[in-house]
Image (tube, rainbow, N blue to C red; front, side, top):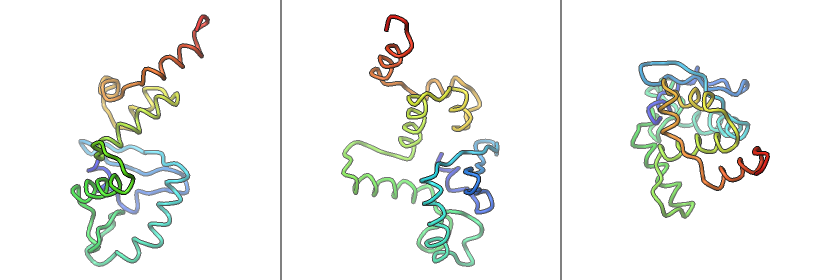
Length: 150
């Protein structure tokens, strides 16, 4: 969620352990794993860019805008829009699209629904089931791989 991203504080990042502590809806706390590529870029951001942006307004927020203040929801939408443009993507893409894609890739990669629920911060497994979809080709591959007559 965008609000979770913009609310991350420096002291809630544990890149060496591969986790970020996130406060979701209703201030529910969870640990979200981050992969090695994200860890590399996060450390680089913290050491190079964030250091140059930080000022007395920055507080402890992890992600800062060009003026050193905390990144806003609108800034995140603008960043995603610019990245979409640079990548030459024509379809609509939003931060929520990235969240949806994250969940779909986990499920298509074999992650169990309960783990995905935890990573997304859903209180109900039903929300996770509705939230994700599985590609028909993927279902055919699962059938071929696991059904005795596949």
